[in-house]
Image (cartoon, rainbow, N blue to C red):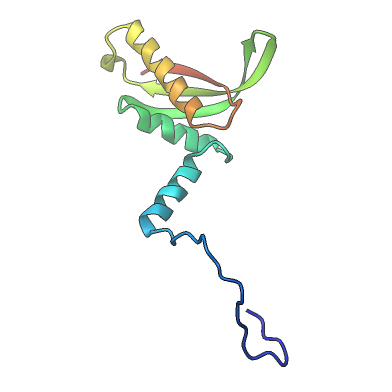
Length: 124
């Protein structure tokens, strides 16, 4: 709002239509939460490590670092996520392999497009 010298009132002579109601507090919180989790924002290694820890309660600690992986057309940059678990929580290598695949898919679905992950599971 700006005041203009000599103008005291204004009247809209054209009717307006098509307004949308204001968002509720729940809608604002939901939208903000979705945007924070969306693919159009930058992620830090600590955020990725936190996601990895919350993915499965058997993951005790997670560490991220830059890495390189082989692809069909050469090599590409990736983020290496090392998840530390207790060996007694896993009964076979197949179970560890499934965790690795599921964690990699989970991280990829929550990251910016073209972000690549290599997940390593280390048993303590």
